[in-house]
Structures are given as structure tokens and as C-alpha cells.
Amino acid sequence: MKLDRLIGILSILLQRDKVTMPYLAETFEVSRRTISRDVEALCRAGIPIATSQGVGGGVSIMSGGRVDRALLTSTELQAILAGLRSLDSVSGSHRYAQLMEKLADPGFLPQEGGVLIDLAAWHKAPLSQKIDQLQEAIRQGREAAFHYYAPSGESDRQVEPYYVVYQWGDWYLWAWCKARKDYRLFKLDRMARLALGSPFEKRRAPDPDLSDQRVFPTRYQVEALAPPRYKWRLVEAYGESSFTVQPDGRCRFSIGFTHLESAVEFLLSFQGDAEVLGPDEVRRALAALAKKLAERYGET
Image (cartoon, rainbow, N blue to C red):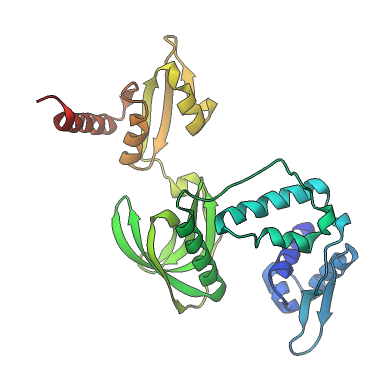
């Protein structure tokens, strides 16, 4: 736990010009004496930390100071650099990679890490703007308002933002929704006309609950058979353990879906070659869609 706390303190000091001992003690739920010992430990590890007493005093990294290279190995620096570059891929700037200058002497930075991560979407500019706006709202403790497009329909939302989250290959906002009176996860790609609002008093927000059953509860358990040439599709989407090979060579799979539309969309990726065993509601939805397509595109 102490190592986690030391890393947390260092992270805060890298992001802020100065913080107070009481703030750190409250943040990590320990005594001020414990924080003082942690600061001493960071100093011994080569972190150039300055402390000052009285009004306006606090803890900070010395101006121009760098983390001693002995604190991090080249492999660890490569991992950090890959993570920072991934954030730069979204922001379109180099501000996160520039933080590396605070972590080590530039001559010690690895030139080739072997890992490149791009978290940007196809429509990069709007996404970057939304992330910047929401981060600003979180820092300032201001409400955010936006028009939201969801499978259930459109709505105008006013929220108290707490976390910008990257999960399942997409960006989300974890916020208290004033309309629903509960915490909700909003997909950034579905937001439009995002604007910051009035300041709000922050709640003791829980960490985002990103469990599959919380965010994507199973409402439709689809049982189906697919020809062996579609193994790649199943492996890519759900892993090699998601199906079993039948005596006739076909792949039998059972996959849960939250929405009927999602189940139909996935099954359509088999181009009509998957045999759906159940549930009946999914079979009926596919039949209705097939009839609609035949009426629209079939021969007259």
C-alpha cells in the first residue's frame, strides 16, 4: 500500500504546482505524519521535493528538478512513455510526452519502446475537444450539458462530471445525471453540443463500475451455429473459448447481448450463414428484417 501511495503522491505533484500536507492526508486517508514520512521517502529516492510552512506553503517539486534516473528502469520508462504517447494520440499535442522531462534526464529516455498505442477515433478533432472540455469541467467542478443520442432515443442531459474513461475501445464520461438521479456512463461519440455550466459541490463519487453485468447486462442469450470459415469473427469478438466445434464442423456459440438490435447486428455479420437456435425473439427479429429487405430490394 505504501508504494501505491508514493506513486499517487508523485502523480499529484507532477500535475500541480503545490499541494498541502492536509490535502494529501485527506486524499490518501492517512495522518499528516504518514504523509511527512512519505515525502521524506520520495526525497531519499531522488525526487527533488520542496516543502514550505505557513500561509501559501505546501509540497512541490523543485523548479527545474528531475526524478533521479535510478528510480525507474529503462523498461519502466518505456511503459510510461507508451502510455503518455497514447494520450497524445487523442489530444493531438505533445503535452503528455513532455511530462517525461520531469521523470528523467532526456539522455536516459528510451528511443524505441516497441509499443505504439493510438486511442484516437476516426473523427479525432471533435473527440479531442470533448475530452479537453470535460477534463476542464472536472478540474473546475462545473456541470456539463449536452444533447445525447442513445439507442433508446435522444435527450438533453445535465450532469456532474467525475471521470473521463477509456474502456471497450471507446471513450466515456462517468457522471452524476441530474435527470436520472444516479451515476451514469455516457459515450463521448454520442454527445453533441457539449457546454460547461455552473459550479457544483462535488459528491463522494464512487469509482466507475465498469463490470460487464453493470454496463452490459445480458437480456438476450443467443445460441447459434456458424460455418467454420467464421471462426475468425468469433475469436476476434469474443475469444477462442466462445465457441465449440460440432461434429459437422460448424461452430456453436452462446453469447449474451443487452439490446435486441445489438444481437441482430452481430448475427448479420455472418451474412445469413449463421443458424440461430434461440431465443425466439431474436429469430423473429431476423425474419422481420429479412422480409423488409426482400420487399425493398427484391424483384418486382
